Image (tube, rainbow, N blue to C red):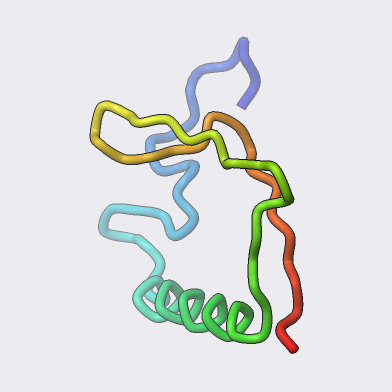
Length: 78
């Protein structure tokens, strides 16, 4: 992982690994994360700070991505 070292193995950055020995719990963990995020967002709302537009830019694959980190405000719902 250092600049003067050889590159890491092909699957070093994948959270669940890859290939024939990938994580057997991946098919459970990913939907669980979606449910967890939905439960967290149910009790709050997320907003851009006043005056911030998000500064998105179109990419070659027709998706919108932020040009920089977008600060978000997390507000509990009443």
